[in-house]
Length: 344
Ligand SMILES: Cc1cc2nc3c(=O)[nH]c(=O)nc-3n(C[C@H](O)[C@H](O)[C@H](O)COP(=O)(O)O)c2cc1C
Image 1 (cartoon, rainbow, N blue to C red):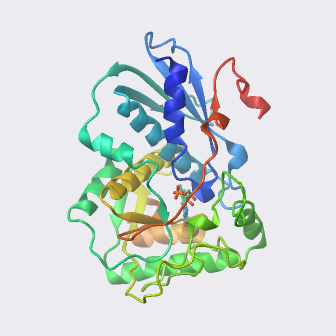
Image 2: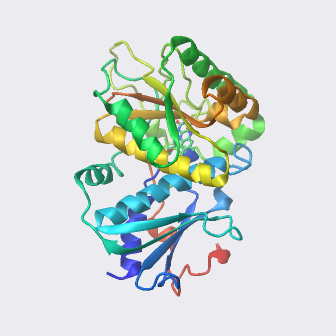
């Protein structure tokens, strides 16, 4: 297959990565043979900074995490084709938006675990709300911790009741503050389309519950409906006990752009590993978008490591439907229609 054919296959999977507010802040460029590696093919992943959340994410940390998740999908898709990807994160200091360059030449058959993760890329959905009281499969948490470590990040389970309550309170405080901030609300509105919108990005009402599902302790979700009453009706009217799930923090030791990309790769490995075991994950980045709360979590709940996301992991039947842009809109082929990145 040509590099372009492989890139089309890879990008069709990469776009199903999670991204903050489903901004999908990425572009891919297929390349010819890299001069330093004759016989190899390559694809590069660029951050689309026009899709950065200027108010919520001024440093582009969440943008880079989102790109890191897409990078993990690129690697996994190449493995599914039997290629061995070689990845260079932020390879060119002169091009800070060039997130990664991935090359391939060698071949090796993918293993059973890689195939299981790959099969979850399109099925996995971000969960929003409570979980069923069912326990997680044994060994899943250990597997998720191992997943994070493989990409240079850590998943810290916050099991102690007091610390878990403090983490929930941080989410609640942040959500309360964000709802009072006009600038942030206007930014959120840009990424929260109304029902029936043909939009291919943003968080659609088919992906969150119409009524907030409270848990104890409560980890409030983002206010995607913004008072419009949008969202999915509850699955049943039964008032079964609903759980918050196992709470955790995704962290890295340092806080540079390369750490953010690695956190994104670790995030996607965690999400796909959980999904392959029938578990779902809810994500809360609200307190990490407020510097003082991020610092509180770092110093009080994550032993000084830099927190990137609050995760809740649990069992639940999911009905959420999300959307993505057409892969052809984010793949640039030299000499093709979209070859000149600067024109878009
Ligand atoms: C860096 C980052 C931060 C996120 N923060 C939140 C959040 O605070 N609340 C939430 O419900 N989802 C959050 N998400 C999940 C995205 O909203 C979700 O990935 C996107 O809407 C696409 O939906 P999907 O994951 O179901 O495919 C976050 C994802 C990323 C990568």
